Length: 150
Image 1 (tube, rainbow, N blue to C red):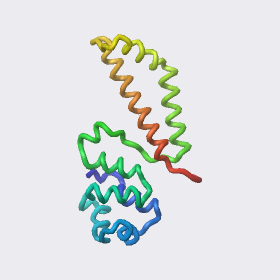
Image 2 (image 1 turned 45 degrees about the vertical axis):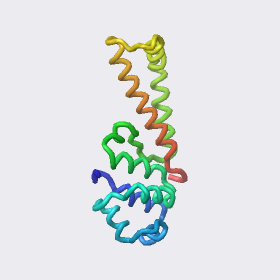
Image 3 (image 1 turned 135 degrees about the vertical axis):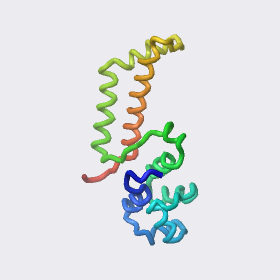
Image 4 (image 1 turned 180 degrees about the horizontal axis):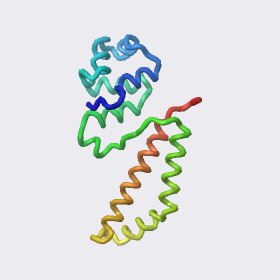
């Protein structure tokens, strides 16, 4: 698992305000297991991550775990960044309005109405799909945004 960011398990636990000991008790595992997961020595098994998602009240942790533990998932599951709610909403609306203002919705309709993407349409279609992926990521960031005062 990539260690270029803070450990996702530790971040989720701390966001819930739990000590390692309290988390271990809630999860029914040892303190040493928590330390191993949070130091990157071991990756928790799916059943432990399921319990963490519930105990830490963090669906985002589930998404991050899936992306971190499977190469295929990184190509399918969006990389959702945890933002504060106002930032997440502004990012989503900026992407949606930019998409519509650039008439990408109309281009997509034009390309797809015949059910065939020809060689000439392919680059535009691929660009539009990429933009839609960014909108999906922004929408997921709204769903998992930090709420409350900044």
